[in-house]
Image (cartoon, rainbow, N blue to C red; front, side, top):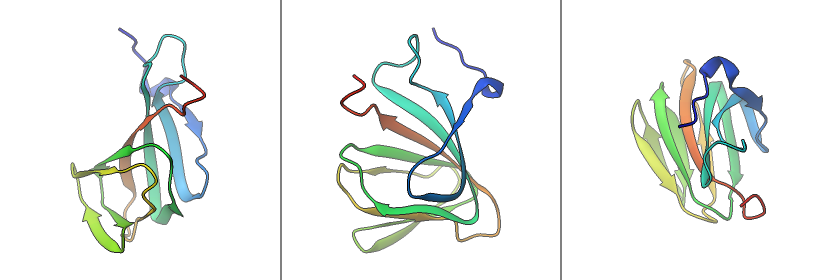
Length: 115
């Protein structure tokens, strides 16, 4: 078992993100998970990411607040404990349109060069 305390989570910057602080909860450690990494993103009001895509799928889980996810021309509002999967190469935009901070768990496989 690999335990990592929240106080030890390291911040990271994700490309094409704005108004967000990301913390790496698990991953990119020699004794950590081998298939994916887990991030915690805290979006300020007006914060978001995209539009862009990645060659691998990712999962979003909203823990607090709400996030608007725009993919394939469809807008979906995810609220507390709602989740979605973004398919490989799917272009998406995410936006916190509320006046509250939104906290989202992000599960992403390692890029091919890391495995």
